[in-house]
Image (cartoon, rainbow, N blue to C red; front, side):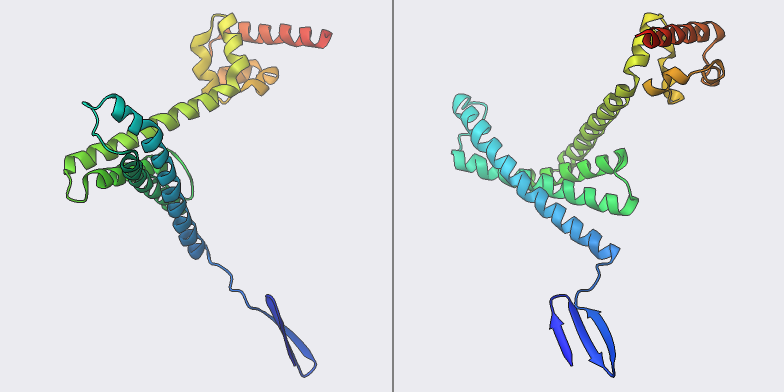
Length: 228
């Protein structure tokens, strides 16, 4: 007797009961392919929507205000053109980013720059066509990569600086800002300040004089906190 329902097929034979799943498990490779297809489609749709808004809300009114600088196109024409370009950029960007993440297993600066480069190349093709000038494609690709790399680096530095707010304040008060890089090199973040010792500061190449000032400052600060 066989009873089928939903995901499980239950077969009874000779007193033994066996269950078989009717759904196949997705392999890691299949998952990566599905993710890449989804991200490419998502990027294309998002880019088209964003591009259409830019063309309609920003570029069309600017064209009416500055007819000598911009082409005299209708609002729908601007929306269509920018939607096409935006869709190409984000579809390529998101798709390549997903591929790079699957290949390299991480989302780092290199992956972001390669993804942005692909987006810039797609923008050039959407703007100039496949027979456009190679110099324009190379320049746009390099520009997008450099812009993405610069933005990611700035964000990374800002995120890192958030762990050294009290450290910066302490070094500034002691006129020892030059040793900020030593703290960062040793990953001596704000939570580690109460646990600093002379040997720890020595390991990050801070001279004896500044070490004494830093340790004295921390000791005074801890006493003040304990009194409260």
